[in-house]
Amino acid sequence: MRKGEETRTRILDVAEAAVLQKGFGGTSIEELIAETGITKSGFFYHFKDKNELAKALLNRYIENDERIYDEIFGRARDLMDDPLQSFLLGLKLLSELLSDLPNGHPGCLVATVCYYERLFDREIQETNRNAVLAWRRRFGRMLREIMEVYPPREPVDVDRLADMVSSVLEGGIVLSKTLKEPNTLAEQVLMLRTFVRMLFLPVADPPVAAVRQGQAFGAAGNGQL
Image (cartoon, rainbow, N blue to C red; front, side, top):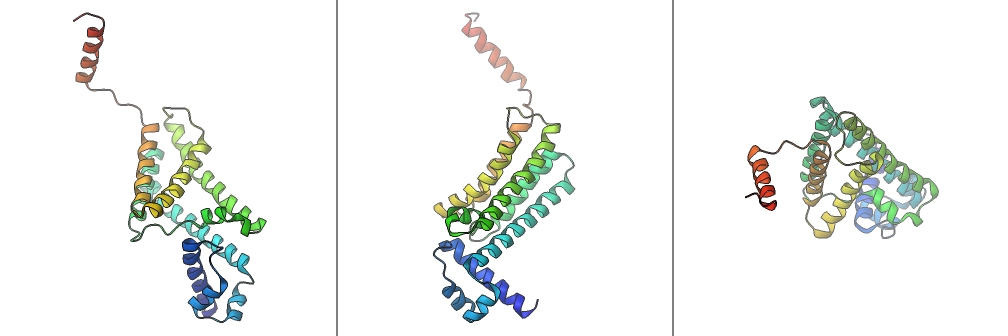
């Protein structure tokens, strides 16, 4: 990596940590310059203003998220041909990855941009919206493949169910940070996994003893005992 690229990456790393901790409004160019040890002209060589910095941060974050999802769910598909089992394994692998973060998930830039969208131009807002729609399409494709093999036990809208995956991830981040419990996000992903499994797997036949017990209760209610 060339020196200019290293400097740009360093600025982005420092800026991302600061933004996730304090928000875009609470992060100043001056503190980024001080933290990275570059000159003011050096900063503006890479980013002409704060809006351009935000755009670069957001695009990098989205690309990294897409790469992680590609790797995790691609690996699950290589290991499992069944679409449901593959999706469940992918969620399991994702929860394990999140559990390995020593201090929990640092936060989501997509959510941060949403919270402070008035600070940004239309291009950044549209980039953010497209990222969320891309997540919907990604998980929607996997869920449609599942539904071709496993009819859901309750009627569901595929896009809304796909959005639920994103909602659990974003909500889990908020819970983890609010409660200061780093494992909460990973645990929420496992709860989502349980829900998906229950939604699509057929109900197993009850044990014979349970059936007989139910029949006995029914007979008692009819005065037959």
